[in-house]
Length: 83
Image (tube, rainbow, N blue to C red; front, side, top):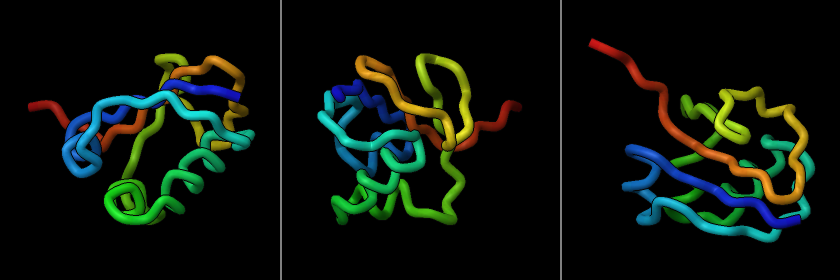
């Protein structure tokens, strides 16, 4: 399936890109994150397990167990605080 991925804030800066279209076999948001981590380099550092990373599915904050669907938009971003 094909998904549109967006990266925000420090994740975007680390990866060097704000978005990409990706063909994937991942079936959940967790599996997609793991596939991106497996790319190594900046992806592994920015999205590493143990780092606080939020994920949105079709513009709704979501749990990583959320199933992926073809054409979905997935966004990764660090936690944000107001002030």
